[in-house]
Length: 126
Image 1 (tube, one colour):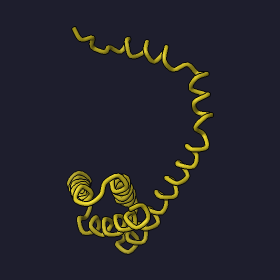
Image 2: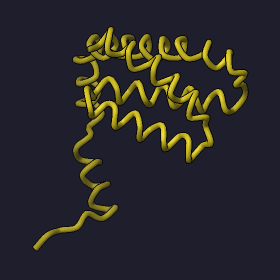
Image 3: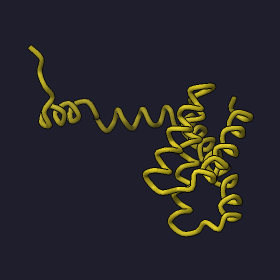
């Protein structure tokens, strides 16, 4: 008979599994690797923003919409880093449809963002 997780069972497991000393030791052991990966990720995301900002400036996009276009570019970058070929194209099309329908973004500008971000990722991380 299966045992379904309750909030109390999950908390009890958390309380006994996550000893502060063990967690602190684990973080100390992986700190140099984690910092190098974080730095690489931050540089990548900053570069994506730098690629997209001039396009947004050219199209007069400011305010909240600017943040939404940057969110599209960053989400696209995260997925493009993990997927290649047809899979990447399908994900890009799905993300574009989501942001166009859900947030009212201009599909032509989204296409331009895709054409900036995806080739850059393929060149540097492909």
